[in-house]
Length: 163
Length: 163
DNA sequence: TATTGTTATACTCTATAACTATA
DNA sequence: TATAGTTATAGAGTATAACAATA
Image (cartoon, rainbow over all chains, first blue to last red; front, top):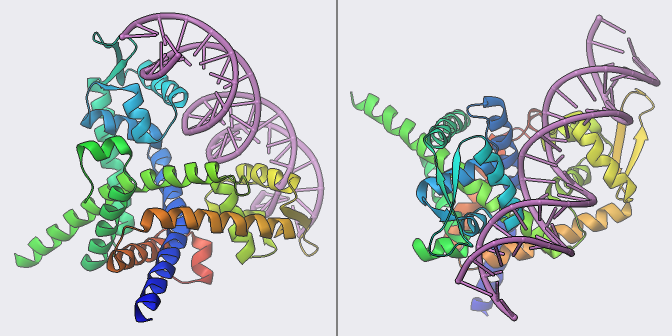
């Protein structure tokens, strides 16, 4: 009976946590979006920024790989990459071994844009976090670690197995 | 000197935490978006869901109030509400005291759609969270509480002062 | 035939600028 | 004149469906 009660508590805790995520994640996301837009560091949208970050970590990734990581379907990703290529931030190249595949890689301008945006975004976010105590910061960072593992895409799991 | 070192550590902790947010929040957000789309519970987008949730908690809120909470400008909000009104989820009404203002309120269908989407989203999210231990869940929930306070909009602060 | 990617099309999100109605 | 909201317009994000090229 006690075990059952525990299970029930766990389930209700899980539901409560899910509710919190459902409310807070979009709220924080909206702030991220607005700050990135206002800062105009390199004028990157959030998905563009994420794509560049992935390509920084995985040079010569295929379009499919990026799409899976970002969580977009191929047509959406193809279009997003169109923009990055037009702006000279990414280089598109056909793979020699399998000519159906497209290999993507950051240009030097792409690297700069990524770094600029990352630094500026981090700085603005850090201002918001300034009022947190050291232990609060630790809680948030730990939570982000947990969520990163939970919501990593299948392909990411292969490379960096989640704990 | 020791104090300075502490300050430096705190700053670097803050930066690291900001980096984690910058990476993980969009990742989780993307999952939320996709799950809400796939579930088709009531076919609500994330911003639509957020607007309904706010109106549930604040009946007869003005368009401006909703816009500020969601983090949209007035034209964007007006258009979003157009869609909700057309679908019969929200009622728009002119305020008698100040005829410039528009008061928004959920219809019964709006309440249902909100509840359906909330339950379905929470359930799907809960599946992902199932592998977390009770203490991990607590960490995530605590982090969400901290972030909710930090990123609440100005108007929300008035009603529910952040700790 | 199956897979990778692109093109075509459509809808939502979001912004800015110009406008209307009310105060 | 200032404020609340709408309309007009535009661009990015995202999806589905249809297509092309390669395996």
